[in-house]
Length: 201
Image (tube, rainbow, N blue to C red; front, top):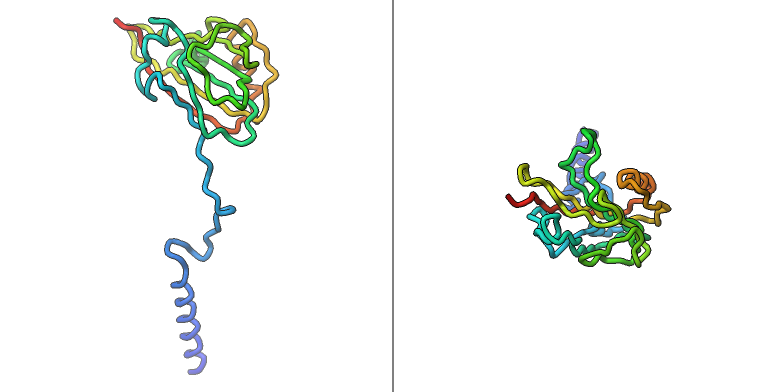
């Protein structure tokens, strides 16, 4: 009889201890590491057009073909350089998996917070960065045919913990692949911004 009473008391004591736990937690719930909230993600923006919206003709092959102003925030600690990549994923080059190289800019200084409108032509830029596209050492604006669907011109920004030892070659796809290979293991953050375009009828 005494044994049964002791078992009942132990059971009630266990239930009482559980009710003291904070709402939504279990006894095995791990504490947050350091209690610090996660850092905001790297963010890419432009005032030239809304994310997912149409790209004005000024920035395309149907207009002045100048590069849009680009800005970024929430840079990860330890960033030494940036790579900006603009691609047209709706293109299957030579019936393969490669898409169109519209712009690759690498070794943008880690202290930079954006690129101005109308980046000048030239493989080597004043800030020490380098650029290439399918049109040469220059920004290549969107140029999707009027007879097809809208293309999704994708701007990708990468924050790296190093500078890249890559020189611009004569072939934009070979150079882009060299940049990708050099980036492996060094990406601290990534941001994406998309604009739509096809030529006017």
